[in-house]
Image 1: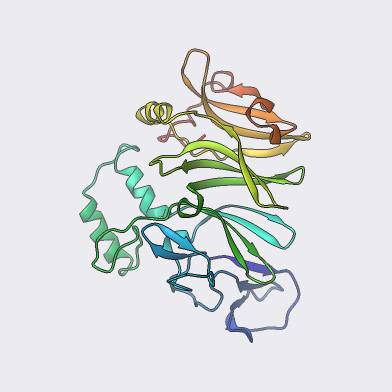
Image 2: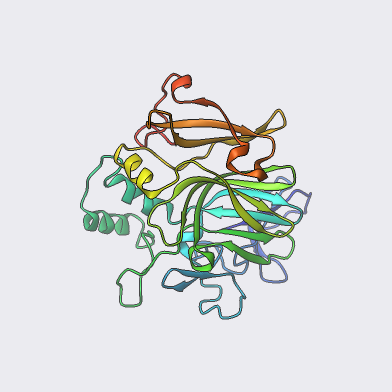
Length: 300
């Protein structure tokens, strides 16, 4: 769910209400009001998600031509993990089905072990049948999940445009951070491409004037590297990124000269030029060998 904050003084209203267009609003009672932008007429405790699920892993924005499930919402797309604004537009990257995917990660990579069916039934009881593990077909069998996406939403009109998704252009991002730098937007995280089962740590550049995108830095160059890192319990879900002293500063996961996996911190004053524009300023070895690169400790 995405809401716009109106930082204006307003007269007292009921906490939850609908405006003249039917959009759900909320008044905090302290001068701030919120208006729901994603599926604006769908009330609280109802399936939302920023986009609509079409089946077989495909998504579409509300109102799009050919949308077969308009305003039904993809429940897996309800968690914003990274966002940045440009003019009237809010760029939003999602974490798909966060709790369900975390349980899947726990039951293996993070060292835990449990019976998946017992866990599913337990969660259905705990959440009164509302827990979302993933998409299902009408016959109750599993459908293909849509994965992470990047959309942009007009904060004045609610217009939504899909920019990145597995079904749209073969890019399924799990972006964890976003910053604006020199007129461009930068998103970092773990990104699956071309139907891959796992994501590589990468930084993407979005030109908000055209919505063109490109990879400016990728920490691991192959799925073979990813597989080796995975076996060592290393996380590829990078999140560290900021602008400091006129440069873009990013964290990533890479390999040192000896072929060991390390966390890295890099800077660039012209990231549009790509991988070669970045300079490594620190890595695991120079940062006291902190273990934040491993899933069991944290993420890079």
